[in-house]
Image (tube, rainbow, N blue to C red; front, side, top):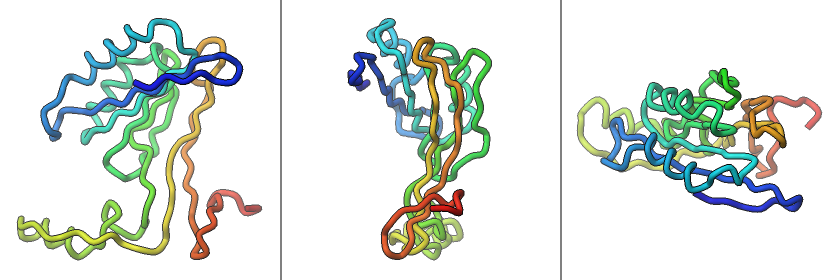
Length: 174
């Protein structure tokens, strides 16, 4: 967990958790979240949780488990941005996967050939990083300063043109 003090004195906390399904054995992310929140007490106005996990179900379960106790639960690891962003019933922003930063015409950032060969043969092949069409994906979460509850969550994708200057692909004026 990381806690920082904002210029106006409010505290913001980030908790990084790792799932267990199809991942290397690690402590239970649900119990770890409880422990970190217990250490934090009611000191932070905003609590952002990153759940790095393989399965949608584990990420969703954690979102509902923490609903109302944290500002946002954002999934990572699968590299494909999901379109399920929402505010859960008790006020927590949620998305299964925020997406990735890297070459979009790829298989999780790698050139297609080696990834396809791995699936076809079951044998390891060296991955090479793909190039071109670089994009950065994520979410913007607005949080009520007083309650710590999410007000909104919005997905975004930024395309990086060949000259390396990012622009917002959803805004024609950029």
